[in-house]
Length: 431
Image 1 (cartoon, rainbow, N blue to C red):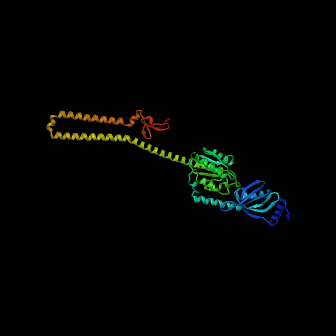
Image 2: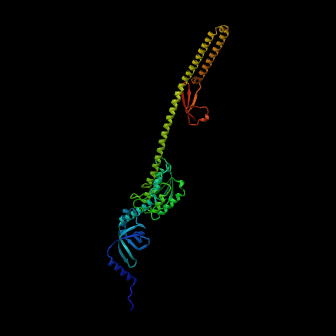
Image 3: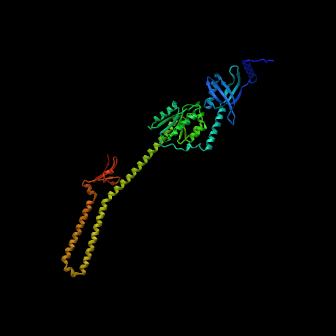
């Protein structure tokens, strides 16, 4: 006997009625998003993977109608800080529906953002734990930003307002410092963030000697997609990078894994520029402080040398007088010794004195005259050696660093010299 057949529409209608009768309630369902298509209404592809093999074991379509989607999307993004995208785990409130023409799907009435936050937190903690086990979590923190960090490799979207703000802040800094930023364009939102930023890092690494630091920046507020900055592969690349990395990815709600692993984290691109400017300003302050200390030290040393030279100049006449007195005293002693010996000789040999009185008297006279002439010559030499006499004659002594200048080749433009004349001292600058 031939069985009664149904049309496809009749069968689908029967399925719809069966689902409506047997599953009239809404259900909270855990699933992973494999695709999200926002076209007014939001169409989603749901998937569940095996925990061990990660192969799909269940798939389904879901839709959130436009009138409900506006609220659901706004609430989810305000809580999680990012839009729905592929790869997120979500907790959906759905009702099973079947349409004769379009088939089976789930009608979404609500999404619990706290479930997604929990899953994101668990995934983030797992990445942090793995980085710590690998011993690379704090590698960036061990790098020191160079004193003169002016050659900057920038990873950002070329059209992002944040990149323009960053460059403008550097160019218009109040100190007049000159920075040299070089852009390495990258996708900073969506699923391509990870691979795009890694590619930019690889390009910088090929020219690593040309840069002092790397800055990763993006614009955007709390609703921007940040999931691309919470990946293990990107974190490992940043952690092992040879240059200090500064992040300013414009996310004020929570730190991303990229923020945690970087050398320095700031909130926005302009804050990253301000950090670099302040860093160079601190270095400049250290240099000017050291310059002041050095100038003060040199001034004190020069003053000490100047006082010592002045003291020696004052002692020169006294030294000449002392030398003359010592020579005259020596001559007096020699004369007394000579007279004494001569008298003794005369007394012991009186008879010979009488015989040679004339010759001895002549000899003594000549000797005395000779000694007197020696004294006169010594006095004249001493007088001629007196620097004050030379100065009074119009001569001068030129000193550089406390020493007489004997060759002009030892002087350079800008050197300070001292010229001592009879009644004072003149300071000059060599032009």
